[in-house]
Length: 111
Length: 112
Image (cartoon, rainbow over all chains, first blue to last red; front, side, top):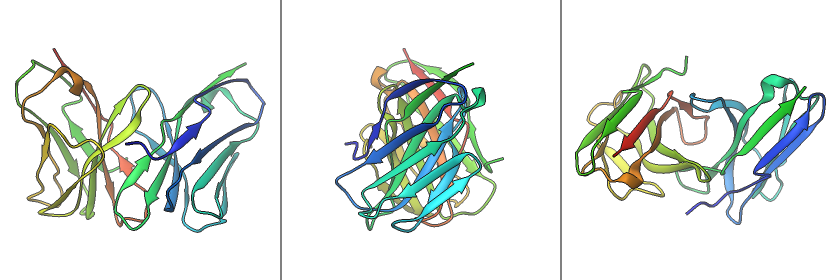
């Protein structure tokens, strides 16, 4: 079954606010990836993290690979309407080839 | 362009019929994956393949069959479709297990 707990499930925020979401697990992951999905499209990669403790930014997005290798968070600063979508975390499970996804965070941004 | 094409984009089929979803990559990356996406479940791994002729089960493999005779293609077959297999199916490619996955646009399958 699903091994990644992603929260929150949904967020409704005003334009300009900062957003934070996270993923946790009882399993160890070697890689963390954050994706965004727009309606009718496949997920698109936002940020990739490869080392425990790594902090990486991509424009207004910042993500971190937890020190324990069991969690990761994504922050979006100064949200804009085009940030609307579903955000997924994904983790490379331990010593396997499997990439496991969280259940997603649905983000709505109001002007 | 993610370099991965799925067909068809939309499919309606009847319960009990066999249906095959196609996935083709324009690269020759080793790893390919099939996921299904359902409300409240995110993306769940059905099958994956590390190379031609090497496949392995994911989280929800029951009712599905895959093959990988060529590196570029990774078809997913529902041998006898059921209503519970109504979903959006995504194919993905990766260079290695530790690099990012690139996704196709998905196939929306409805089983009636």
